[in-house]
Image (cartoon, rainbow, N blue to C red; front, side, top):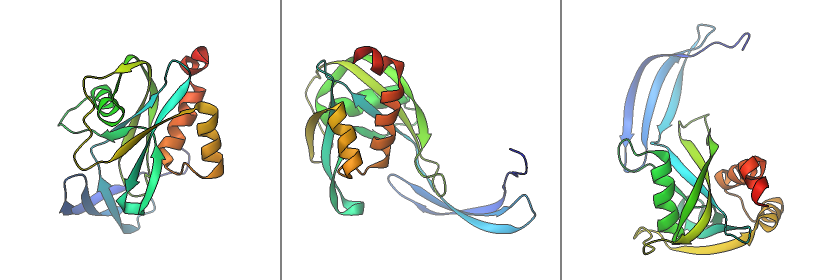
Length: 186
């Protein structure tokens, strides 16, 4: 990274701590010596699942998202809840809670930062196959979720048409399609 300098934190203040995120306002020194302010939303991280049914359909969920005031089609996902919760354990929990499925096979697809310009949120992606009914679906009490299985080709078409607009879902669908594990099952 020729010519790229790391920014150094000089001081900071936690201005908000909530149930899901914290907000830090830091004063930093850039590589060229200039000082500036960075506002950073701290997030515990999350896991996301690309659940594949035996017939090749991917299981999406439809739910209302208050922040954008819309019903969105997404892949099942959720934040790492307990301190130190492993991403795979989170993915397994979220798959059961949001879809009512468990999986026999779990394949890591990679991880990515959602919007590193202002948050440190990292999402861990997994492909789940060999789906079977979980021991009782129990979505969180503050969620209303509809399970929507669609062919992978249809999911990609929904992205192309703008019907899937959730960035983490779009990124994970691409990661799944690029995975050798996905190609072997299709």
